[in-house]
Length: 214
Ligand SMILES: [Zn+2]
Image 1 (tube, rainbow, N blue to C red):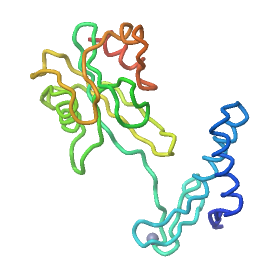
Image 2 (cartoon, protein in one colour):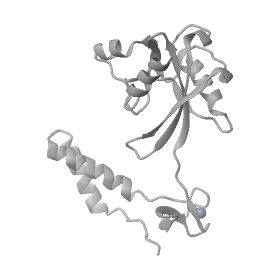
Image 3 (cartoon, helix red, strand yellow):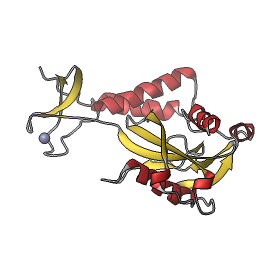
């Protein structure tokens, strides 16, 4: 049985936007709850369309879970996490980190990483992103697969980060912040935290593990 997506109710939608506007000025717990509810309301009620034919999508139970379905193309429209690749460069007890300029966690520090280009192997993407963001070069063949991290963003997009690891000695060049990085430098994790800087959510334990295993 198909369930048509809920249409946005324009009156409720306007009321909600007004409420968000008012609640932004009053950061009480109640208003924060209203804000979260309102954002969920907007995300849930945005219509989705088939990227192939433009038909509005229905939802249908397929393979044990509710999935978007195009009745014109007669097939499920799958949603998958986007693959990303990054590298942890370890130098003794320090790791090379970049200060993020893109959501999530803008201003926090994380490993240099980015999305894979179409048909680009993950290790090559990791090496390319390292050079673009930090100025260091490394051979993709010398990167060791270290871990993965599935990240869910507030806007309901999902990213699978494929994490490689190598040492400073395996790289060439001078550390210089490049694209998508406000700054780039080697940090001891505890020194970074003592400076009241933050690490991108979900990465502190991965970085500590990379240092301990090097
Ligand atoms: Zn379609």
